[in-house]
Length: 277
Image (cartoon, rainbow, N blue to C red; front, side, top):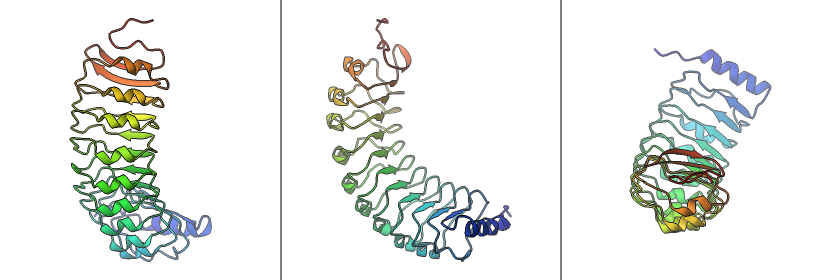
């Protein structure tokens, strides 16, 4: 039987009660289950169960209504409890690196969420109700099987960070065009053959990653991304870069591999195929 540090659990619960009753850290204890109740958790605002071996969660977890931060990263969860929607004060929910194949519809009830991490699961679809999470500022969906995303994600207009890398997308979803607050957009590792012209309307972007796709050209409208500091174009069949890339005033890092080799450039770089000036 895999090692489970039950003594460590009770020790950390006791320490939390004595020192930081609002924080309970049960990271990396090899837990396969969370037996409950662990004690009086009514005042816990931050619960960390990351890097265990959990395959399911108890229903009572959904009644810890003081929670603001719940970290379940790096377990083996395939489902979530229906009671999770009771955590209406939750600001951050970390579910990355699990085995989730679907999300409950009522996840959209967690309208206080500002950070939602769902990367490295086995999701094939998302519920439309995620569009209710209009306070979200960071959303990571990378490394799933999401060939199609719900249009209601376009209602998440407070997003500043969106990671859609390695999701098997063949086109950039049109609803991204309405996310005018975005500063970080990662579309790497998909099956994109072109980028839409409207991407250039997201003028707040500072970081854009489109590496490991099938792009053969870049739309000229991207020249309007004057706040862009980081542009990652690696591993696309691009032979050359348009001249406007050299004119992006804020660009400090360009990653590109083309017919002239690999470039990881900083300000003042010569463009591929040019001599130093």
